Length: 177
Image 1 (tube, helix red, strand yellow):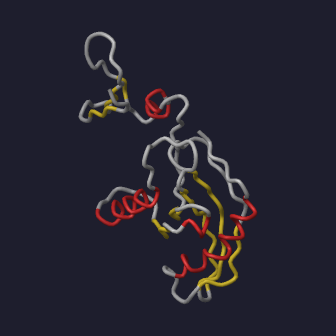
Image 2: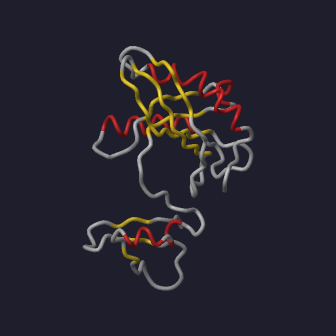
Image 3: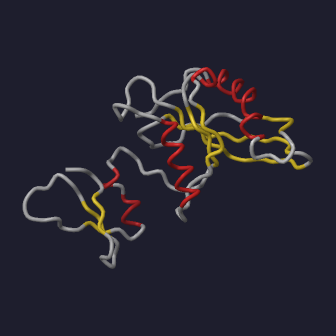
């Protein structure tokens, strides 16, 4: 379910206006000379609109360039009845802070729809694979390429597909009953 960005030019202009405030929270001495590259929509993803872009700025005396990710509250047709992109950002921030699980750094949480037209969070970009929604994640060959194996969950037809690691130590149900 691809979610289109109605006006990328407007969004880039708004990012140029508001990013310095978000980035300066982590900067040593403010943000200057900000530029925002083209907005890109990654393939896959199901729950929120995701936008990847490159930003560059001066942080004190150091020039920085980073790929950043916006996760925007869905509009119109959506996967979850009560989607809450800001809660997703809080969860990622807390997982990073409280565990050793490698998740992107959440740089900003924004519940004011005036900034970009809807609530969002901003995070660092982490290279990796985004499982596709079509076909369903349990049919994506990427999981098997990482060593997951389909296992027999019982007799007859089942409405879920479990996968386990090759040593059989972990068991995960990837789709609900």
